[in-house]
Length: 370
Length: 104
Image 1 (cartoon, chains in turn green, red):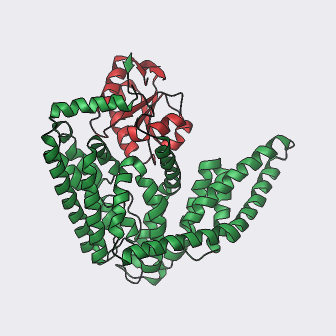
Image 2 (cartoon, rainbow over the protein chains, first blue to last red):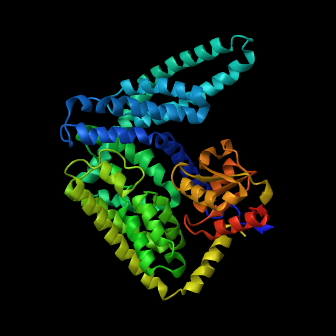
C-alpha cells in the first residue's frame, strides 16, 4: 500500500479555489482560441501601415478579426463549455448581438453572454425534452435554439453590450490614469503574488488581455499584454535558485529555465516560490522594473504572447519596439535575480539544507492536514 | 480517500488550469516513464476533469482542491515540482511494483 499526500483542503482555502475556478473558466474560453489570436497578431504586426510589410489588402482583415471573429470564438467556446455543440451555437449567435451593439472588441461581453445563453438553453432543453413527441426532436431542437438565439442576440444588443462597453471604458480609463501618473508598475504588487497562486491565466486572459485588445485596436499596441506575461522576473528567480538556491532545488533549475523562458510555461517556477515564499519579493521587484521600463520606452505588444515565451514575445512585438521590449525583459530578470539571490544568501544562515528538506517534508504533511 | 491498484491503472490524467501548458509537459514526461506498463497519460483542464476518462489524476498542489471538487471519487495525487518531483517518482515506483495507490 503506497500512501500519498491527500488532496486535502489544508493549503487551499475555498475563496482561492473559487477565484481560480472563475478565472479558469474565463481562461478556458480564451486559451483554446490562442491560435486565432496569433494569426491576428501576426497579420497586425506585418501588414498595418506601421508594420514590417505594409499592405492595404491584407491589413483589411485585421479589423474584422478582432471585432468579429475573436469575440465569436470566445462566445462559441464559452457556450460549448456549458452545453456542448448546442451551447456553442447559441453562444455564437448571442455574441453577434453584443458585438454590433458597440464599437470596441467585445471580449468581456462574449465571456458573459456565451455561457449565459448556453446555460439558459440547457434549461429550455431540460423542459422540452420530456414533452417532445417522437419524430419532432429535430424540429423542436432547431427552433428552440433558433428562437432562443434570436432573443439572446437581442438581449446582447440591448443589455449586455452597452453595460460591458461602459465597464470596459471605465477600466480602460483607470488603466490610462495609472499610466499617466506613472503608477502602472504598482500593478506588479498584485500580479506577481497572484501568479504564484495559479491565477496567472485568470489575470491575463480574464482581465488584462481584454483591456489590451481595446488598447491595441486604437493605438496598434498595448502594454497590458506585458504585465503578466513578462518572462523576465521568473528567469531571474530561476537563475538565482540555480546559483544560490538550496542544493535540493539546484539540479532542476537549468531545465526549468529553458522550459520557462523558451517554452513559456511560467508555472514551472511557481513551486520554487511556494517552497521559499520570501523570494516573491524578487519577482515583484523584477515585475515592477520591467513594467517601468516598458512604460518609459513606450513599447507595447500587438497581441497577447501566449505562452509567455521569449519567442512569442518577439513574434508579437511591433516594428521598432524590440529594443525596449528586450531591455525591459533583461532589466526585470536582472532585478529579480539580484533580489532573489540576496534573499537566498541571507536565509541560508538560519536554515541549513538538511533543515530545508525537513521543513519541506513537514510542510507537506501540514498542508495535507495530517 | 480513494485508492486504486496499480494493475487497474490504464489511464492517468494530468490536470492544469488550461490543460494545454504545464499538464502537457508533465504528461509527456510521465508517459515515457510508464511506457512499459502500457499506461496512457493524457492531460485536461482541471475544470473538465470529470469528462476525461481516467483511473488516476495527477495535479499540482495549487489546484488540488479544485481537482478533488471535480472528481471527488477519483484517486488524486499531488505533486510540487514540474521537474524532478519526488512524489511523481514515488508514483512511478509504486506502479512499477504493482502496489495499491491511495491518496488518503
